Length: 92
Image (cartoon, rainbow, N blue to C red):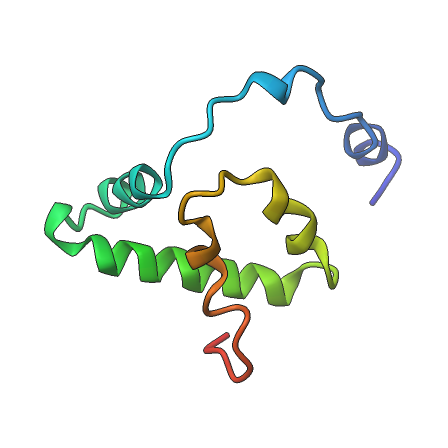
């Protein structure tokens, strides 16, 4: 980090995110499938890919960081997103 990037990184997080719409897990998986262009028939593949991404992120961030994020997610199905990361010997 140099003198130019330090101020940008130190900016506070914008306020006003309390009213963010929280989409159900199945809609999230549908968006993942759409972005991957794998189609509606392969929702299980899209969910698995999202789980693998969370697993990789869990390995890359400070220990416990994902646990800070988890309570902010809706209650309907997002626990499935952490399934791979919670198992020892995960792929990442």
